Each structure stands twice: as C-alpha cells, then as structure tokens.
Length: 136
Image 1 (cartoon, one colour):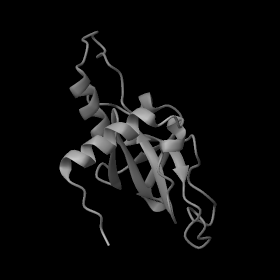
Image 2 (cartoon, helix red, strand yellow; image 1 turned 60 degrees about the vertical axis):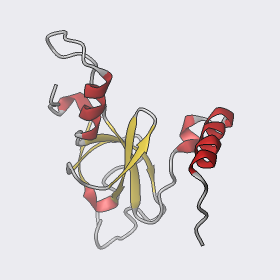
Image 3 (cartoon, helix red, strand yellow; image 1 turned 180 degrees about the horizontal axis):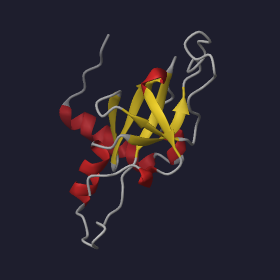
C-alpha cells in the first residue's frame, strides 16, 4: 500500500525533517543491499587551468558527467562470488574508482548526486581522481 500525501503536507514534512535532522552526513548515505556499491562522483575543481572561475551549475554538471568516484559503502554481498572475483574485491570503501558514464542508478542529494553501482561495474581503481582528464 502506498501512502499519498497532499503536496503541501509533503513539502512541509520534507522541510521539517531537514531542519530537525541532526544525524551526521555519513549516516545519511543509503546502505547498499546485495552486491551493490554506493559511490560519490568526483566534482572536480571550481576553476579551470587558466584560472577562470566556474559557476556552481558548471561544477554540478561536471559531477554528473564524471566517470571517477569515491567508494562510500559496499553491500554485504559485494565481491562475495569467488567464481566471478577469484582474486578478491576490486575496490573497498575509500578507494577512487572509474566506472562507465551511464552505469548505475543516480540518486540526487544536496549538492549533486551519488550513484549505486553493481560490483562488476567498476572498471578500474585510481590513486588520484585528478589523474583522469575532466572536461574543464
């Protein structure tokens, strides 16, 4: 059964919940289920190499098109299949990873988005996200 709230009530509850929420930001990260991994795409810099300041909209769109992300959480079954991953996990919490541009599910958050990927959608690990060429 789905609960449908009137629009004005839903907006009021959302505003109240945000104002009263004292949990740390790390507690607000969705906990992945199964073999899924939650990543935070790299935002990049706020200025170009030439020193031009980028707008918030440009920085946000750069994050949306990013293929590099920080691993925030891994699900309990991520990399558990020994036949599929005979050498163990490809990444762990805190690693910077590369993934396909349209991979995973996008979840909007304040200031951008996070993505929920399957464990086999990770293409590579990198030491520094700045090593991967960004648009700006």
